[in-house]
Image 1 (cartoon, rainbow, N blue to C red):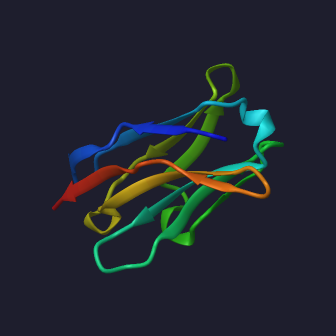
Image 2 (image 1 turned 30 degrees about the vertical axis):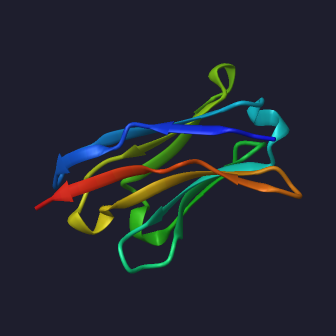
Length: 115
């Protein structure tokens, strides 16, 4: 089983930045891939960014050039650096761990961007 604990959300003005953190209860190397998803009110949950065990990354088109996913293996933590925030980035951001047969989710952290 994998437990995920997220932190770092908050209220920020447009153009601002935040760093979201997701700490896992298992080694990142035991997990196929980790990702960040978001869900805005009335919308479906969508992939924002992901990083594989090997370190490959991918991003949603809407966040390319503004968001960066990274990891600290020693701390079992994955980060999402969110820059140049826009009001449309407002959502609950969820950490996700693909452990193969099972996918785990964190509890979510709210990001609110004011215009």
